Length: 115
Image 1: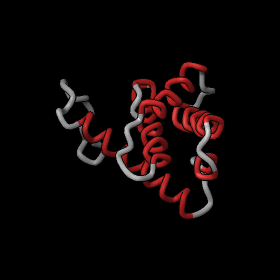
Image 2: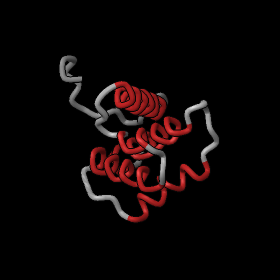
Image 3: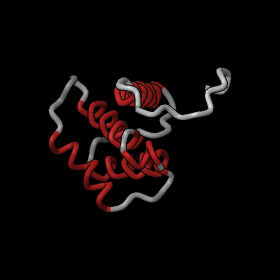
Image 4: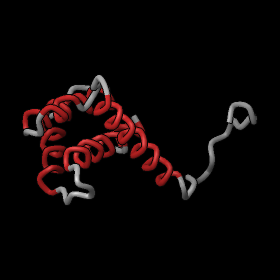
């Protein structure tokens, strides 16, 4: 947009915009998990050590602080923990499924996208 001299916003959002945001979030969250698992963990370390409610809470707190730049509320933590309780495993790695899913939930929230 800067190089093309586009100064005015589009009147309507593009149809592909939500899909693009989801794909970027899924890719980034999956890449972060894979890098954490392969080397020195940055974000998902607690659940890589042991998958417990306490470790998931630590990861949830880090996700909200990192992505939303604020302290998590009890509601945030309960929602992300609730995701684990209802998760149908997509792969053989339930920890990865939850971690990437929780990351995508936070990264694609209205708060993350618009504030």
